[in-house]
Length: 401
Image (cartoon, rainbow, N blue to C red):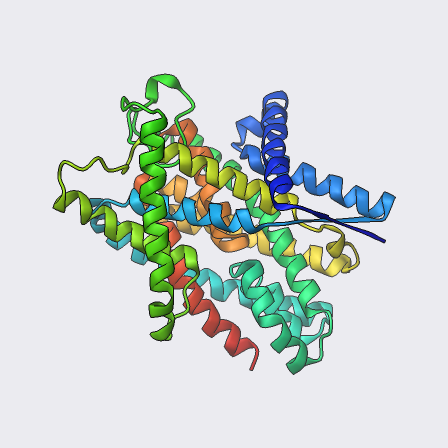
């Protein structure tokens, strides 16, 4: 077996090519456009399939250097924070609480499904964690963190592989399901976003919906400067946060820094040009998200899934059906049955099956076509990347005892 390690710059370049490949496929295949599948998802899955074929047919294991991906994640979520005006946060208070409650309920449902599946299929008890919220709501990071403990406590030597496979399949399913769910809800209830909305992530698909502010090298550099300052503050606060005993992903720290800065600096320095809701920030956020997602999907090692058998496929199928039903019949109605609720429904697939960036990518694909939904972009990341991680850790600890 030959091992091929792709360098950082080449990985970044391949990710751009992967995005354009996905964009080309979306133009050629009408259902991909109709169901709002993000270009990076289409291209990323194609690239992951190519690496799988290289592994199976040529005996070549291809892996990518992903340092740039982690930095792009910081850029993206810091941009989300910089777009978070205080008025939106206040208006998002009640929906934020409702969405958090709905997510907690689904976390319990997801783990009950895992418990039932393990019992019905005669699987080792230790796999319950990785067929439920640890790998699906928690994602790859949570899986990797808990796998050594589960392997030792329950005597499951391949717990890491099963957890990563579950998280990988969940990520793929979440990427493919979000757009169709939102499109169904928007069409059935005849919903639409604002005709002229401030840019949040990405530029509108239709030119007449574009914001009027200018975009050029000066506005882009100003935006990158503000993003870099916010990220540097986030790095500076990382140690302070750890001393409190609260474990937060770095991108959540940067998100919170962005929120604080965007609601204080412009008020203190009213003449300062600030990038909130500008086309420049929307463009940087869109670029960061798409390349991040392309890197994440193209680096998936799908061959790790192949030997895990039919049981994993059955459990993931049940989890997916449960998630889709919960989103359509519970999340969407309780979030208000409006356009914002439909966008959140697209994002909830990322909460329930994939990861926060997947959720945001799904919502971005919808808002580019149907209009802005700023409240959705604030409350969903706070739930999926902050509050629910704490609750999920408690649930995993209970299942692993």
